[in-house]
Amino acid sequence: MIGPVELALLALAGYRGTQLAVHDSILDPARDRVHDWHQKHLESTARTFVVTLISCVYCTGWWVSGALLLTYLLVTGQWHQAPLLVHGIEWLAVAGAAVLLNRWDDSRKDGA
Image (cartoon, rainbow, N blue to C red; front, side, top):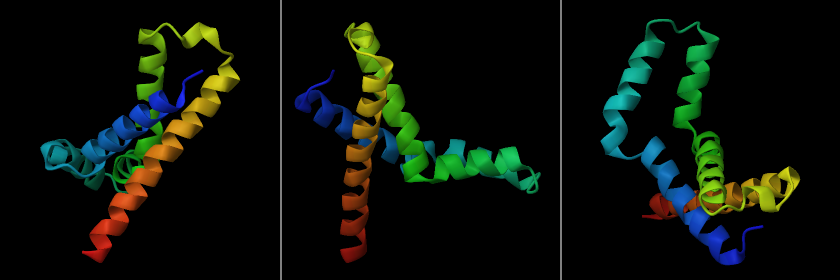
C-alpha cells in the first residue's frame, strides 16, 4: 500500500499529467487533429466519446492517475504486495487528490 508521501507525489504527477493532456499548448496539434477527426462524423458515438474524454479534466485525470499509479506500483515491485481492491482504493485516492488540485487551480483562474 502506498503511503502519504507517495500519494501526494502521485497526485501532483496526476494533476500535471492531466493539465498536459487537457490544457497545455504543446498538445494542441494532437487535440486539434482529434477534433477535426470528430467533425468528419459528428454522429459517431465513439468519436464523441474520445473528444469528451480528452476535453474533461475529470475523465482524463482518472485515466492519467491510474496509469501513473500502475506504473509506480509495477516499477517499485509493490503490485503483488496488496490485493487488487487496495490498489483500486489507491487509484481513487490518487485521482481524487489530483482532481482537487485541478479544482483549486481552476478556482484561481476564475478569481484572477
